[in-house]
Image (tube, rainbow, N blue to C red; front, side, top):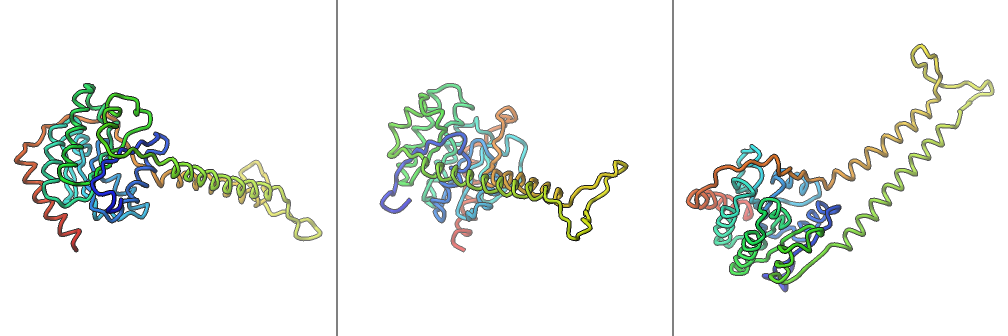
Length: 287
């Protein structure tokens, strides 16, 4: 997001299949900006780990984590403001208002509007909360990025949001390229596996006497050509490689059934916490 796009409010529509990779790609595109990241269904710790493993510097990201406390994770961090639960819309709204008053962020990143309908069944409350948040971002002259699932784009909340944002974006090109990379890597690995497997059928007879190198297995007294072991190892490598490709973008989403409503923080407590954390954040980004 460059200076020409200053103060834009963007809605990113992301398909469920590529939601986590798209989140990572979105943060990569604003890497280096001072970001206030609001998370309603993933812990800040999980997000940090995934961002870091994808080469993103998280020093400039301040997290508003509405999940960790509600599932019993109380490991306080100076770069994270913990909200009592994702059900606490008023607390989230007050926290963001206080954070934006400090004028330290370039972008407010809200993940996600789709989560709102999980925690609040009343569409009018979710719509009012979203509209009010967008208004606050505009008022404080900051850029805003809101995300939602593609499957939710026809809901009343998202259709209402369409009218309040400056731009609607999807990452189709990135997703198409990502799918091609996955397919290419998977094809290469599977090809490699079949080469290993084909090689395993070759019975090596290094001398005219046809000496067979094998392993005796238990009482069955079976002789296995060592190339079968190579084939087996090749299969294991294929499986592990595909798993690692998937793990690269994996961010654990918390099951709403595990979330417990806890006592919301008072406005005074929030102000005090935010003041302390912003002081630390300013020192960190200026170091």
